[in-house]
Every structure is written in C-alpha cells, then in structure tokens.
Amino acid sequence: MVRWASRLSRHGGSALPGQVIERFDRGFLARTLAELPYGVVLVSGTNGKTTTTRMVASVLESLGLHVFTNPTGSNFTRGVVSALLGEVNLKGELDADIAVLELDEAYAVHFVKQFRPRYSLLLNVMRDQLDRFGEIDNTARLLSHVAQATSGTVVLNREDARIAHLAADVPHNTKVAYFGLVNSLRVFFPSDDDMHASDMAQGEPNAADRSASVRTGSDVFASARSGMPAPGVRDTGSPRLNLGRAAFESTAQPADVVLKHVGDHEAEFLIDGRAVSTSVKLEGVYNLFNAAAALAVVRAVAADSANSAAGSAGDGDSAGDNDHAINASAVNISAIDASDERLMHALAQVTPAFGRGEVVDVNGTPVELLLVKNPMGFRLSLASFPPENHDTMIAICDEYADGRDMSWLWDVDFGSLRGEGVAMVSGTRAWDMALRLEYDQVPVGQTDTDLEQSVERFVTANPGRPKHMYCTYTAMLRARSALSHIAQVADAGVGR
Image: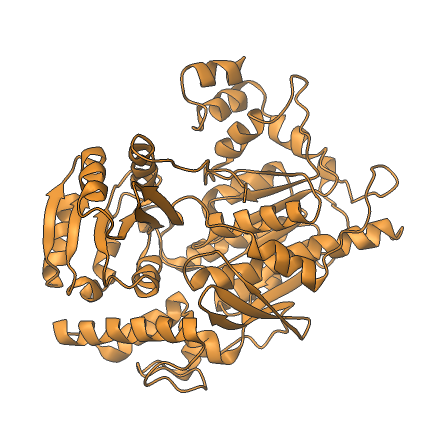
C-alpha cells in the first residue's frame, strides 16, 4: 500500500516510503536482507561512492548474479528501505542474490547497527559537509564502525592513511584486502593530506600562483591520460609542487588490485601481480582508481563463492540474527567465474553513474553532468575536464544532502576557468558562487537563482558547442529533471 501510494503521489524516488516503513516495521530492513545468499556489500567513503557502487553491481551482474542496489545515490538508511520497497513482492521477499549498497558515512553507522554487511568497501576520507561531519578524523571514526561490523571481508584504500589504518579495527575472523596505485601514479590521485601539504608548502598564493597551480593540476591529469609524466613531475611520485615526502608515503600493504596505468578511456591493472588492461567508458581519471576498488571487492565475493561451492565452511557472518554464511547446499550456488578476462570485459561495459560524467544529448549538443560536493572532488573534476572549447555552468545548492556550509568553495581554485569563463551560475547559492569566481578573476555570463530556467537557457545557447555542468547533489537532481523535459535522460539504474 505504501509503495502504491508513493507512486501515485510521485514520491517513488524519495525516502518518504522508507520513513513510513521504518515507523511501522522496524525489522523490515534486516529481515529482507538476511535472505540474500551472498549477503551485502556496503560501499562508503567521501568521494566515489555512487560510481563505485554502480561498478560493483554491474560487474557482479555480468558475472551472473542477480543484484539489488540503491542506484540513485539515496544513501541514507531509509533511502535503502525505500529502494527495497520498490523491489520486494507482496510477501516482502526480495528476488536477488546479493545487495550492493552505497551508504553515507554517518548513516552507514546506523545501518550496521541493524545489519552486518558481509563485505565493506571503504574508499577515502576527505573534507566534506563540515557542518555534518566536522573534520576528517571524525569521518574516519564513523567508518571504523563499518570495519568493526563487517563479517567477511573489508576492502581498504591503502593510499589513504586514515582508511588503511582501519585494518586495526577489523575483527580477527574478518579478512582484509587492499586496492592501490603504483608509486608513479600517486601524484595523480592526491589524498586530502597530500593536497593540504601542497597548500601549506606554497603558503598563501596570490592570483598568479593559483593560476600556475591549476595549470600544474591540468598538466598532471593530461599526463595521466597519456601515461607520460607531467612537466615538472618526476617518476618517483614527487610533484613539482613542494609536497613533503610523507604526503605520498604508501602504507606499503600488498594490494589485491593495483591501478598501474591510465590512458584515454583505457586502464591497466595489476591483479595479484598479473598485468591486465581494458578500455573503459567511464569519464574522469579518478574513476579508474574507483574501478580498482570495485574489482577488489568483486574478487572477494568470487573467492567466497568458490570456497562455498567447493564445500568449505567459508568465513560467514557472525552477527546474531544475521548469521548466514554462503551455503552451497542450502541454495543453488556455484563458483563465480571471475577470471581476469571476464572482469575486464565486464568493466569495459560500465557507463558513468547518473550525474557523474553522464552525457545528455540536447538536440545534438553534448551536455556533461559533473557532481561536485567538496574541495577535492571539485579540484579533480576541473583538472579532468578541460574547459577549452566548452561552455561551463556551475549550480550550487545548500540543501541538507549537499551540506549547508558552502565555505568549502573557497578551498577550490577556479583559475583554470579564467580563459573560457563561466556562462551560467545558478542554484540557491548562485551569488555566493559568482562572488567566489570574481575573486579568481573568472568572467561570469549570467547569474540566476532559478535553476530550472537557467538549465534550459544554458543548454540551448550556442547549439552544438559541448557543455560542462558542475552541480552539487540536489542541484544535479534538479538539473536532470529539467533536462528530461527537453532531452532524453537515461534511467538512473544499474543498467549498462
């Protein structure tokens, strides 16, 4: 009845149905997920959750599993409940083998109190939504609860010291795996500490210094795409910017999957030391690092399936009412074929998650939607998507899901946009964004808080000229909705 009412009232994509179910049936989430033979994969971290969740779900589906996920990025607990409500039958049963769930760092803590995941993938910790999380050490403490609650395998980013150190919080009977980078690529993927060390080394830069810094960042990502060192960047991983050695020190943990090389829509990985490569449809160099993370957790699932199919006891869950290991005799489970060839073929088919490098065709004009929600993510996006020969729009909103504190915009260097300028600035915080651009001497064409009208004016101007739209989360949802009235916008699901 709740599902029918939510669809009738057009609340099907919101957390409202989950709120109703949580009020009247608090055991719905745990009871439904407990029936999944392969358990739950929980994905969390500051940046890359939605894209990585999509990759994990898509690759597992390509390997033959029926996957339930929350593909729209509704990553609060009641958002997961709402997504479940849309998939269960009238008996409350979910037809799936495994769930791959994206959880907000804070709400992941609430989730694991209700249900222990069999697998968790913890990506990174960066400054984000300071009004909610505070500083990043607190965010790491939140993710430590996920590591403590995971019953099968915890997959950690060895290049992020705060994430790698969570291995100390993993229960003794839970496995730990890592994903990482070769040393020569570490400069292309700075952690929050790396970027902070860069800022501190440069001191308080003037406008010319900031411009030079952005050019360096663009050079770095251009060189990452070509596989050649950037100007002023030595192969040792020490960039021209005066980063201290500690900033790029690896934890030296052996990693199950390592990103070895990135090119133009191609990537090479080391899997257990074996070099494998594939073409990719994903946009943004940083998503190739997310791909390494996705491959690592998929391999953990495949390894457990092989053990169960062979009749081994497996690692199983040990979480009270949630105890249920992969049991080959109770359900029809066979070993998942996760050969290198199949993994690379599956990864090559994955398209960007909605709003994360997604391209919408508006009467022949490609419009690329780019989610930005913290200083690091915005910096990496600006470096990954050069503004030359593109029109640019920035839409900033400050709803709860975005974070109400927009002061982080002052930690982003917008000097790379100075040459082309920004054609449109919109969203509820449009004037804050316009002021920020003025301080970096970036010309702004129009500023308008009416986001929907601004989107239409922006995408229909200069027909045929490619466009970049940088949006915070709720601004991106509204922009997609506005675009759906004038162009074909893909479904936000897992489908490839």
